[in-house]
Each structure stands twice: as structure tokens, then as C-alpha cells.
Image 1 (cartoon, rainbow over the protein chains, first blue to last red):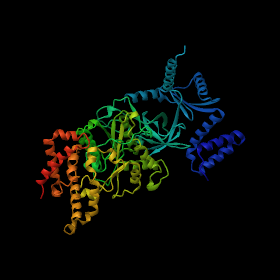
Image 2: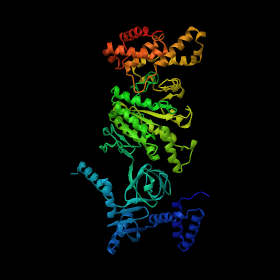
Image 3: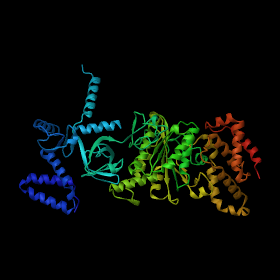
Amino acid sequence: MPKLSRRRIAREIVQLIARNPERQSEILRQTAAYLLQHKKAGEAHLLMLDIADELQKTQGLMTAEVQSAFGLASTTRDQIVAMLKNVTGAQSVELSETVQPELIGGVVIRTPQFELDASVKRQLNQLAGGIN
Amino acid sequence: MISVKELSNELQSAIDQLKNEKGLEKSGIVTRVGDGVAWIYGLTDAGFNEVLQIETADGKTVDAFVLNLMEDEIGAVLLGTDAQVAAGARVRLTGEVFKVPVGPALLGRVVDPLGRPLDGKGPIKTNDFGLVERPAPGVIDRKSVHEPMMTGLMAIDALVPIGRGQRELIIGDRQTGKTAIALDTMINQARQKTGVVNVYVAVGQKLSKISRLIERLKSEGVMDQSIVVATSPADPASLLYLAPYAGTAMAEYFRDNKGHALVIYDDLTKHAVAYRQMSLLLRRPPGREAYPGDVFYLHSRLLERSAKLSDELGAGSLTALPIIETQAGDISAYIPTNVISITDGQIFLETNLFFQGIRPAISVGLSVSRVGGSAQTKAVKSVSGSIKLNLAQFRELAAFTQFSTDLDAATKATINRGQRLVELLKQPQYSPMSVWEQVAVLMPATEGVFDNVPVEKIGDVTRAHLAALWADHKAEMKELSKGDKPSDDMKKLIMDTAKKLAKGYEG
């Protein structure tokens, strides 16, 4: 059986679910079986990233992870969503938030293919690298 | 009124501003890393050979460059130790391919393939950068090789002359004097004040050897016009792979700025092995002897950058002396045959000649220069015409030397002449000969003046001959060193001096 690329699998899954949303559980179970059969269960998280990327390209549905040193205010959250919609052309943005005090300040926004690292930690690292 | 200049400035300013804005950046994730290779998810826009920056746990970055572009992941070769890189690390594109610092600021320096100084003399201060991978000059951009690149080694300059812009391979087993030839060529550029810049690329050479070579360059006063790109066997294969290309980029600066450069790759066998290691770790399908299928292209694209440029482009040149190490003298092996087919000739060094005391141990029969006489100094060309034939005839008859009493006069004469020519072509290391010295030695030898001098005294008589000419006719010898064909008076002067001296050495 020819080897299928993960991106192609992701594309197929998104198309199948879009056409048959009621078969979502069955499609995902078959995907799990495929991954286990081909000993690729460890790549499940990468497949999810590919699916997220495919959803963004085909249906404008974006998932993004936001890390911040402190919790996000609702206005900040709305601004981030608006910015992501504006820059990427996404129609809808699903945000997940985590608090990481080691960032010191600022935010890090990650989508499957992009990253915006406006944290104080990165700026300090870059300064340190420039000095060295 | 609309000003084009204003529009252009404003556009450029807008471009610069946007470039500096830190917006959404493409980023990927290291999924696995090991043996100097990082496999990365994402970065679907990455280009071949593009430089990546991998963030380490302590916030620093490690550079890598893309060599495998696949649908699901990319394979990037690390330029530092993979101990600093962990799975899950973030990776960013730089949008650039590899560049190294180039320019006169590198002269006298010892650097690694990334242009970082290794000699402890401080940072390299230059604003110029050259692309490590770059297309070779096209056909129209070139001129035929017509200027000599004197090595100072009589056996080479007379029999397999090298020209500026030529690629001449030095090939032989280990410990046959390959690096010695390259080193003497570099020394000769300083001695003869040719203005040629030397770039010595050490690919996986022992640090002790590199150190000795640098010391020798310094003691001979050559280091000031040389650049050394050094990699040792302890360096990652990625650096060994990049070293020749980086050295070429540094040499190209001089070629492209109306100068002349000589680049020595020591050696390309280790370069091919490093590339094989990288390719196997990148899971590329192995071919013959486990080398990847593009191992020919590895060297062909490197060596094609050595060229003589046209007058319109400044008439600069880049001459290459790649070195290949053979096993048991097998020049029909894979990598040697590849490089032989790329270069414009080869100098083949034989182990048995070396141990017979014939040094440089050049096999005259197997060595060739495809550029030939068009790159030879007229003076040397005028006296070296018959040497190759004499030596070829001698080799044919060499087996009969044990039957000296049973041979006819013509055969004896051929053997006689051949033995003396072989003795004549021996030359100590670090003693390159100038044009006048080579002409002064070859002319009487090919005319038979030394035929009655015992073989073991050939060295003495030639030294005495040169000393006498320099002492009594310095001005004429300096004139001869300019390279023009010697006049009849000059020939008579040299021959008379030689004949007079030879009488005192004849047995």
C-alpha cells in the first residue's frame, strides 16, 4: 500500500467530516486505527496540527494558542482575535489560553503554521544574543 | 509633480519598515533530532538550503540549514551540536541562504566555514558577504585560460603547466606529497610576488597538520596573502560539507574584483565522505558505495566556480587545486574518477616514486594538464618541449637499465638522458624555483650538456650553475624571469655557463 503523507490524510479527514459531519466519530476512529496500524500513533499531535491548518485554509476556521505571563483581559482577547482574522483571513478563531509566568510580559500567539512572539522573555534573549 | 526618486525611496523605506516589524512569523517544531539532523514539522515555505534558527531551552538559537524538503516534514542539518536542540523546540525561517564574510579583512586569518575566526585575533571586520552556494560564471562571462599559475615546482611548470582559472587535480595515496605541492604553490605566489590570494580549505584535516601548515605559511611570509578555512574531524559533518563552498565564496570576492585567487581543497575525498554521512542520516537513498546520487554534482558545482573571467568582468581568475586521496593507487575508484572528469587535468603522485626518492613523486605518464602550453610561461615552454618525450622514452626502456653493457648506443643515450632528467626534476620542499631558475636548469639538460655528469652529482652541478648565473648575470636572469622566450644571446649565455661548469663534474 503506498505511503500516504500526513498532510494528505489531514486534507481527506477535513473533507470527509465537512461532507458527513454525522460520521465524525467513525472517521476519527478509522484514523486512529490507521495510525496504530502504521505505528504512527506518536504523530497524532502533528496530524491534528495538519487538520487545524487544513481547516483554516479551506473553511477559515483557525485555532490559536495564546500564552501570556498574566491572564488575558477580555478586550485583549478580542483584539487578538481581530488581529488574527485580519492577518490570516480566518473567519472564526478559537483561542486557547495558558498562563506562563516565565514569559515575564507580553504574549506568545501560536497557530499551526505561525507564531507571534511578543514576549519580554524573547526580547531579553535576543538582547543577550546580540551582546554575546 | 511625481518624483520617481521620491517614490523609490518611499517604497524602499516602507519595505525596510515592514521587514523590521515583528508580525506573525512562520514557525515550525522540531519533532525529532539526532546525529546532527533535526526533523521539523511546519515551515511549509522553507526553501532548499535556507538557514533556520532553532530555539534552545536556554533561549539561545542554533542555526541549521534545510537539505530535505518533504511533504510532511523538513530535514535540516545542524551547524552546532545537537545536544542543545530538543524535540519540541521552535524553529523559525530566516529567509536567507548561507553567507560568509568576504573581503580583504579575511587575509591572514584562520576561520571556520561560517566565517567565525579561529585564530584569536578578534572579529572579522567586513561589510561584504558572499553566498556560499552560488551559480558558476556562464560561458559568455569567461575567457580561455592563458595566464600561467607558476607553482615553482619544475616538474609541474614544465610538464603539466597550470594556468589561472584552471582546475588541476592533485591525486595520490596518503603521504605522497599532495599537500606539499599545494603548499609550495602558495609559497611561490608570495616569493614571486604574483599578487595571487591563497585560500586553503582544510576539510576534516587533523588540527596538528593545519597548525603546522599555518606556521609554515607564517614563516615563509605567505600568511598575509592567505586565508585558511579550517575544519577538523571533530567538527560536525555539516561544517565539513560547507567548508569548500565557504572557501570558494571567499576566493570569489577577489576573482570578481579584478584579482586572482588560488583555492586549495584538502581534500575532497573527506568532503564526499562527510556528504555521504549527512545524506544517509537524512535518509536519502544510497547509491554506489553508499554515496548519494548527487555526489558528482557536489563537486562539479563547486569546481565550476573556478574560472577565468572575461575582460568585461575584470579579467579576474580563480584557480582550483582540489586534492583527492586514493587507496592503493586506484584512480579508477568512484570519487577519483568523478573529480578527474570534472577537472582540467591531474597531477598523479605515486607511492613507489616517493619511496625511490623522487620527490615530488609525480607520475609523468599519468599526469596531464588539459590547458597545456597555452598557460605556460613562454620561457619555460621554449625549453620543456622535449622533456616529456625524453621521459616517456626513458620509462619505456627503464627496465633495461640493468643490462647496460648489452644495449646499443642510442638506447644507452636515452636511458642516460632520462636518468639525469629524473634527477633534475627532484626538488626539495619549500624551495619553489623562479622562471629563470627553471629555464636555466632545463635548457642545458635537454640539450645534453649534463649527459656526462654522474647522476648523483646532477643536483650539485645545477646548484652551482644557478649560483654562477645569479652571481655574474643577475640583470639578465631578472630579465629572463619576466617570462618571455629567451633570446639567442640569453641561450648562449646559459649554455656556455653550463658547459663550463659541467666539465668540472664529469666523471
